Length: 297
Image (cartoon, rainbow, N blue to C red):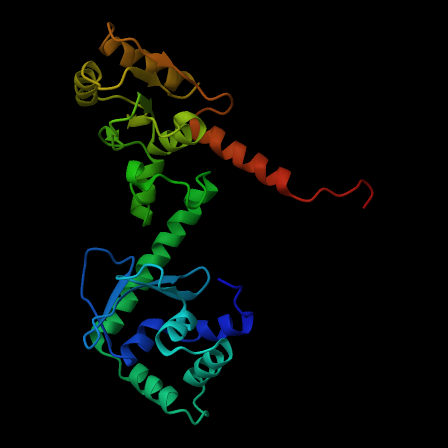
């Protein structure tokens, strides 16, 4: 796809895509399962579109449920459905937001916007709240060292809210476990899920399943761990606790639960925990990426 005209992008952002689609005969499909997208269907044609908002860029996009290659912005929708050229798209989109323009479709769109169905309004508002919360949580996770788009969501679960984020960066109340793949070759134990994500980034290579225990093992956790570690399907158990006194104590306690099972101790090269090392590596990478200036300038 060719780079888009920045003027066209600016005017696109002024048009609410779900409202425009509603004006074009698409109805919202009510669903509480995933507020991360909106599904809209044209009952006359059967055309089904999945619509999402990028709150950071303040832009809407769609993808066709029947033809995933049919996707993009409002401009792409107009090109695909109405066969418009880029200049014609710009003229159409400008007219949508200009009440002074004598454009029948622009007038009809603005009227629909003023009297949009409550179901559509509520669905859009819910979607925006969800996307804003998810974006905020992902920004924080990125500052902690997990770059956007690098998290194995199947393994660790999605981070879509501050509640999800809190579960990642705090000690679990019980044992926390990632998902297991049949190809996994190691079980790795850490204090927090964030440490597990950091270990995966450093050494995991998508071959490890993770357990997070917290910093203080309870009797209930010890019984569960003893049972689990005696029957692990993997050939390797890694105690990837921190390099401090808490980490050493945890490693000794876990090994003592099943003394006949061989375990390996792996600590971060620097920093107290794997998550600390991940954050230090990220800060170093950022500093190296900054432009260097000659002395005296």
